[in-house]
Length: 159
Image 1 (cartoon, helix red, strand yellow):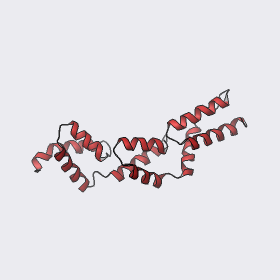
Image 2 (image 1 turned 180 degrees about the vertical axis):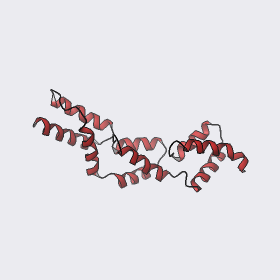
Image 3 (image 1 turned 90 degrees about the horizontal axis):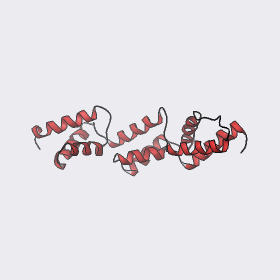
Image 4 (image 1 turned 90 degrees about the vertical axis):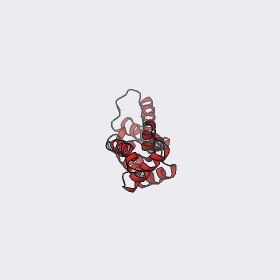
């Protein structure tokens, strides 16, 4: 396809990328919604990849790093979000292995748990709420159970 026919979709893709890094699928879906055909989208993706503006592995790594800062989320939530963005299961698992160890997942969950209200009158109920909260943030059942038990055994004695 000639450059004249690609200038508009390329401009749209670059503008879409200017807000944050995107996956190939996100760009493809965006351009399809703008009414561009598959050949045009494919050409744009090839050019963007050739310019190192689109790389799913880099996107995956950046996504994981951003999710670990601030109010962290666990690997299950990250896996779900990246799958929705078109990243392959193998790539997600590889990137998660680079950024998460089993110990680190527990440390992140514990950092979230410290912010949780531990002054409740019913520590058993509160421990369950904390576990549910950690699971909703993408932490594994094992980590959520261990961290909530540690927090409430330490603060309120054995249940």
